[in-house]
Amino acid sequence: MDHVRSHRTSLAFLATVLVSAGTTAPVAGAAEGGGTIRLARVQPDEPPHQYIAPSEFSIAGICLHGDLATLDRLGMPKALSRGYGEDSGGGYTAAIYHYGGLDVTVVRGRINAVTAKSSGWATPRGLKPGMRRADVLDLLGREPAPEHLNDGVYSFVGCPEWRDGELVWDNVNNLFEFSFGGDGRLSFVRLAAGQP
Image (tube, rainbow, N blue to C red; front, side, top):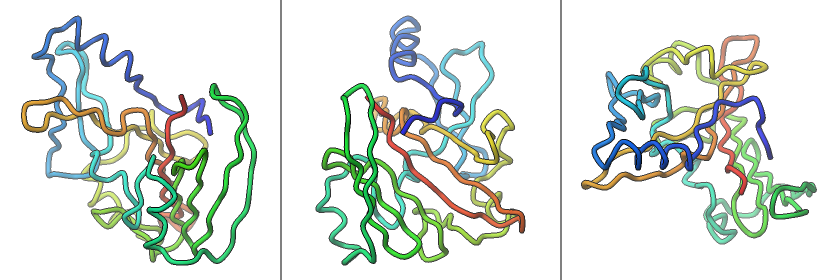
């Protein structure tokens, strides 16, 4: 799945910037108030950009790029559907497992997307469909910047962060998406894997 109009940060671009800036390049994942949306800058002279904390790239304990066996913890799906697509790896079949308000898409034996559409499915910090906008903003820690909003859907990449002295690139090519319905409540939360 290609999200052409989403805000993306290329791993290759970030790596190039870090190499040119040296190993002390100021990539930071600090967030005021510890919210889900983090501010980070790749170069010291650029304004900080909004990213999603890497720890939030999980719904109901299911993470992107996991294998099919990780779905065992969810039990039997209520339904299974198939789709087809093409990317730089060629044509593929997508199997979509439906668990009653949670859809998990598997491509080439790996989890490619996880979409929560009901309140029974949440991210680690508790973001889940049905939440009031004010409660969502409390969890996010800040108002999402308008640049992340496309056709009513907010779309973010993961934030690179320092862990134990190493820069970790979890989810910088994956998308964390959500949208509010006309009633002002969160209508869905989706994780989508970046394509090769």
